[in-house]
Length: 220
Image (cartoon, rainbow, N blue to C red; front, side):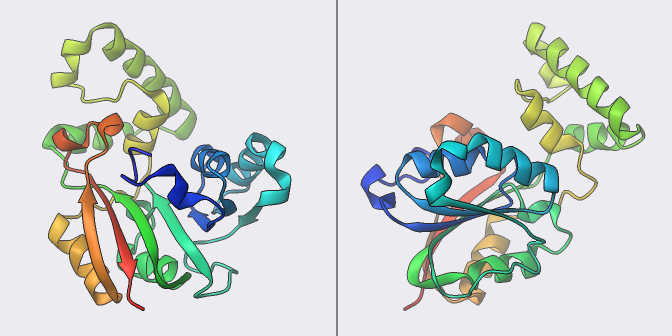
């Protein structure tokens, strides 16, 4: 629970939305911790992968193909909304934040991870990779990630993650909105959250990253 900085017992029997579930890695973890989860993703492939990866928990998970701006879920009924690495790819971070926040009961928790201000090197590589067609971009990212894993000192010039998945997520999408901590705090404030705090998960090495992990408790 390093990502949340909360005890495992806190999550037991909670009703959770995993908004933008991707392949279901966080959905799987939440289910293992005793949650009931509604997992949603914009892509049918993501939903299919999530169903496959969580089939042992069929009685405790629902997977829904949904646009984050038009989620077919009841508002004000969930204990937790988890939205990790999604809002900055939507094209309208503020509206997407409002939509996921509206799903929460009063007094409960929204947890998000969004991009902070990136270095010029990251922006340079995004620009380079955007020139390639999707399949060629995948091949190039695989090659460069493997290359920098073999020669880590090259990350000074090629700032890729050791994980191909993380590298692809950071460099391939065409929409990559960046935020300051002050902007994210304003979003929580404007959407009626009474308390919020930035987290520094050790597994992510967040203390050395500009990215923002934050959760907030909605006003009663």
